[in-house]
Length: 391
Ligand code: ATP
Image (cartoon, rainbow, N blue to C red; front, side, top):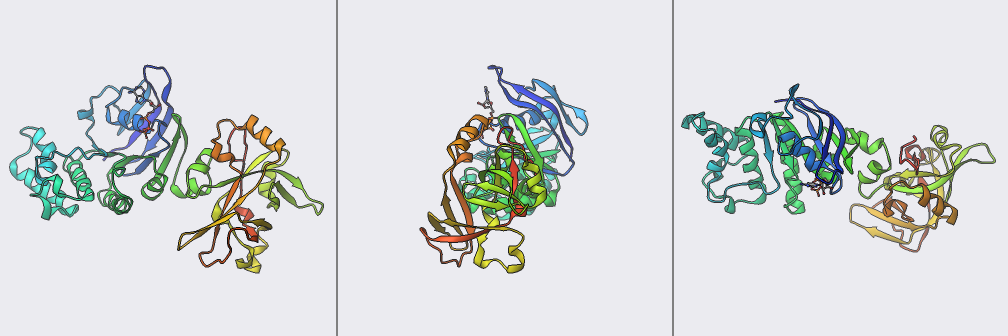
């Protein structure tokens, strides 16, 4: 086991554009850290620099406190588990797992090999399949063989590069659970690259969100979800995504603070309003589940939020949950301002559609006008110019 420390790591490819830009991350012994972000954000490049498959342009890479920038991969003793598993089709499961020990010629006796392979196979529930060839295994079993190979190497850390992206949704779910369980049993430091936020949220002790080579935030899944540092993280983590509703913070005639939005006034708790006061336009980030049909909310709870009326353009029923969609129009002045301000927001962030979670039993239909309650304590206000979370 080992700690992995990245200090101000930069990677520039030949075009001079930083694919990884000044990233510092401390990974503790035994920790499971996920690198997540959209395609091209630099997550694979970062993983390849940890393992030694890519030169580091600037910064320091430390394994257990020792600088390894110039160390070749084999001297770092890290085990990489790839998307395609990199199994040898002509070798049995046993020989595939034993492979790293065969490579280290003469270092392991046949008895050592037998003992380690059997132990790894036992942990991975592959004992019955040791004589099979990879072609005769399921995707999940192949994945476990690849992990077995990493286990027998007794590597300092496991590095996973999108290992589940070839699997169908059901198997991906199963393998996610297996990897998570195995990592906890073995307690081996692990770094896992994915573009899938669900995988990131369910697997990691901590999740590092990257965008265009820059680290946006590193935190526990819960903290990322509840306290996203900026618009990008807020929009990337969670499905369906957080809604971003433009508005201005105003003091109403009764003296309470509210957010003036295209959907009407939403009353805000004072500490949230204070964060957006005096600003021209803010973006209110509200997750779909922080809305509810007002009629379903207890009287005692209702006071802790704000109610507004809206027409649902359509409703999606998914069996165990239901989502309502509301279209709205932004004031042309707001559109102009947002376009000027919005640093590099995706068109999606500016969509004029709100998604609200409804109870599965709800009978509302598309076209219905309904009173919606919003839990205003859970609203975040973002600066549209910098993307920063102000709350
Ligand atoms: P994906 O999920 O698509 O694999 P990623 O987040 O892993 O994306 P990287 O593969 O690390 O991203 O790439 C980061 C940036 O560096 C991209 O803009 C990519 O085009 C560029 N890049 C990656 N490899 C090279 C290379 N060998 N030469 C030049 N540019 C590269």
